[in-house]
Amino acid sequence: MLRRLNMNPVASLVRRQLSTPPAPVSPFPYHPGSLLSVLDLSVPEVSELLIRATELENEDAILRDHTLAKRRIALLFYESSTRTRTSFELACKALGADTTLVSSLSSSIEKGESLKDTGLTLRALGAEAIILRHNSSGAAWLLEEATRLPVVNAGDGMHEHPTQALLDLRTLLAHLRPGVGEVGPETLAGITVSIVGDILHSRVARSNMLLLPRLGARVVLCGPRELLPEQAARSGPGLEIERDFDAALRQSQGVMMLRIQAERLAGLQLDLDEYKASYQLTGQRLAAYAPAAVVLHPGPIIRGMEITAGVADGPQSAILEQVTNGLAIRMAVMERALLKSEEGGRA
Ligand code: ASP
Image (spheres, rainbow, N blue to C red):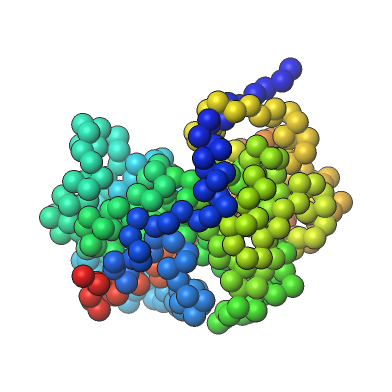
């Protein structure tokens, strides 16, 4: 029996967006502590964040607790999250900050309060930075413009998820360039990373596509036409499309599997049995074509859909390492957000 997923009629619009990265709502982050896109960071800044993440991870917990002691950080979440929300919260707390969570359920957002008014309310309550997850692409830019606070984008619609790309980079480096501290434009030269599945709706894919080539990696995008339009290869330098998963695997030292973003689909049809036959990462496929590659997945994983349980739990999987790396990366990102605040935002 065919199982079908409906896909969004606005997909054609998004396909067009993929060919040219959407113009940010504001021309640059107003605040130097903000992290809205991976493009806000130069390669040396990426390097600094990676190094700082390791330092903070290794620091004595009592000393680390003074880093942002009593600073106020708000987490504003309009979409569900497990890993991102928890790791941001634990990262802020590990630095000694006070956090508060506002989620769309259980707050005045349910009563119709706008993003701008919610942001201004949080600022009036003393929030010094806001971590935002939103279902609309570009929401983080709007919030930053409205509040002029440092805003950290924890995923905006189908657009970007910069801290995920940083933690993915940390994970890839640990496996493919062990021992490397400082990174630069050639650090991942000779490395191919395949990003596989629902590229169209994935903010994780977009942030990785924009970050990994800047460190020298070749990025191969792999998926069916419905989920990977041809224009995606023109989103930036260093990107190629390979529709044949086995061929993509053969070239890869890193494989990043993606969930089909069911919450962003409605209207288009996808044959899931066909999808699994062509794009599911099975133990057999991995052993045949990429027996040494490191396997990543941003989570949540749907076992038996894009990845089998055997691969998810297997020796090549770095999925839980990614989660742990999220904590270290988010400590460094939040320290940057607040310490850059002290340098002062751009008016
Ligand atoms: N957790 C990731 C995100 O928020 C990936 C996913 O949801 O599939 O984009």
